[in-house]
Length: 391
Image 1 (cartoon, rainbow, N blue to C red):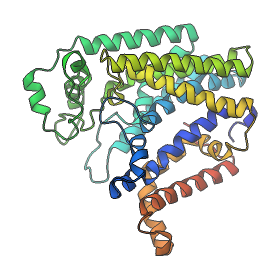
Image 2 (cartoon, rainbow, N blue to C red):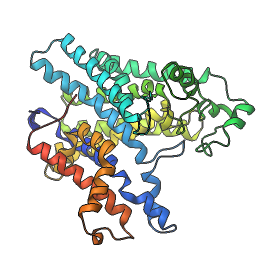
Image 3 (tube, rainbow, N blue to C red):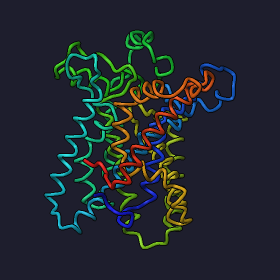
């Protein structure tokens, strides 16, 4: 039995549901439609439904930081509930440690494909990244919001130093990666070269660390540029969520003032992150979770959270967000189902529905929306059964 709505911040569930639906939609087929119909209006929407090649931000890039922010935000609510139920600090710490291990294990499992002969030890997907930082999130969040803010500053400053002290790539280094797929817009020059693809400090760490683990082939680089150590700055993102959660729990201000505060801090973080990015002092790169990305994405997440907070807690439009809440209360379930079964669901829709249900022009949209609808129905059934899958 999961918690009742009275024990939860419904706007947080709605926001989480929105993000998970966006993820499970696979972009609603918009990217595929734009590729099939160049020059059409689909091209206008396409940039927001695919990851930036390296530097910059799109709606699609905000899925992971939003989810990680909400993981951090949920910790104060969870700990408050556990304290009221009589659980000790050590009991909560043990739960956090077990959860962290399970999340990392699930992340490794999802990184290992059916055709792989052995376990593939990669830690760059969202579950593994949350798991690597989760126990630290719990420890730091129990110290209070002031300490969380201090740790955010220390993490971002320390991670900046870690990248800056790493030597800039030489001409030979740049030439070696110039022909690799995905490096066209990811090779940065001058000072920004500290955050270029495959030549940065975190990439060097992975070339050492991942080759300590059993592998069929020596690890050389991640094609997308994602790195294991991303969990360190993304811990700052989760701690930011923890600060927001503590604020919403403990603040005696009215809901309207809380909402306004979220917007103000969101705009400030967005401006700082954008300035660091466009001036090339520190490019905002989601794939290596640069500190400027923490600030820029954190600003957008706070603004989106404020919108849902206003809609649900102030305007009272709970009926409007109900389809989102259904998913938001089973976010782990829909993430795993989409990762493991999306292709199987799509193939079975084709088997059991007439061909007329899949018009050629709209095929990418219909397939992805069909999969999303089936996943939503599963979440709705779980919701009706009061079955909430948690770790």
